[in-house]
Amino acid sequence: MRWRTAVAVLAALTAGSTGAGCSATVPGTGSPARDAALAALPFDEAERVLAGQMAVLRSWDVCAMHDVAAAERASGAVAFALRPVRGHDGCEVALESAADGALSYVTIEVAELVRGPGAPREIGGRSFPPVAPAEEAHGRPECGYAREVALGWGVVVRGEVADDPAASCALAGDYLADVLPRIDAPPLRAAAGTDPAFALGEQDPCAALAAVDPAPAGVTVGGPRTCSAPGVAVAFGLAQVEVDVEGVAGMLPDGRVEVVDDAPSGCTVTRQVSDATLLVPSLPYLFRETLAVTAPGCDAARTGVDRAAATLPGPLPAAAGALALGSLEDLPTADDVGAPFDPCATIGWSAFPAEVRPPGVDPRPFPSPVEAGTLYRVGCDYASDALLSVVSWGPAAGAYSVDPAARPGVATRFGDRPGLEHRAPPAPGQAALCLSTMQLGNGLAGVVTLARGTQADLCAVNRAVLEALAPRVP
Image (cartoon, rainbow, N blue to C red):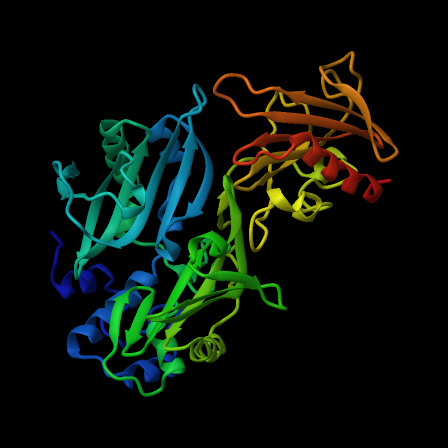
């Protein structure tokens, strides 16, 4: 059951910050040129009203609605990431239990509302209906409640606790109570309260459509980020383009990513159109802002992207004291620990054998957490479907050594440098791994590789990486 409510509800909610209607100037977005472009589009009256309301929803910064400390209190876990979900319109805090490592999540998103089972949550004399799990939940025990706004849309707060539907609902309701003041008075993207302050957060896809096709027929608004007319469609996105967008991905000469999906129903060209990017824990690719144009052929779609991209702004500067997106952990850098190389930058995926690299555009390695008992001082995770490797540096101490007397392994050499190699047979229910260390300047470089979906010799993988690293470090 989808909810339909009066447009006046949303207009009342946002009174004083913006007006309803397609020509309303939402802070940070509107301009005479934009409004003129929209006024010329052939909306019917319902679509025109919907276009104006979507502009209001786009003006809200959902990541700035989060309260990380409140998420930790409600879950009893430690937050390790604040990251986008489902494009610009959702944002989650990922948390890990210090006791057993169990993961939980709280999500805030602007979404079309679908009623879910269960009883409403009562907070301060107000009732917040349950919503159905997001399609992306794929059967996980996600639970959410809605702050209804208008036109079947609203702000949804979701909770997820592994394998525990009741705990998921308790988490969602408790967290909703904590962040409700921020939902009732939504922080605006124009305030640039999160870092990075993505450039396309408030941009109107219907204005981009007008740049692609100055004389379209009937125009349909598909939500805050999509707009279409017969034969052409425009959408804005925020995603790990290489894995989230269907088609063939490639790197453009300017270093941005483009994906082409040439389907029988039409060609879609999705292009990174902003230099604002975000790297987050556990997810290997950068989040990138995209513009997608669908047209009858790829040449027309690419021309449409060119035209629309020319109208878009550059990245916005974040405000002082903005909430940083991405990792919430204090991960050490090479400079912090005096390492002679940066495990994330001195080498890259090109040092790994071709058969274990990710296909297409290489993912970005992510800094490794360093706990009290971690052998190394700084590290970087390299993850593909084939394997997971951690490249690291640390001072020679204890088991972080090239000495076979200090830990299991066989003495060897990597190029002209002494090293140690330990091929660990897989224990029941565990993957095979290889740990290799190499003497390097004032410490050791290390690579530990765990098999995921490969039969490759993991120690040969480590050797390739260390032998590529050795000549680059004095």
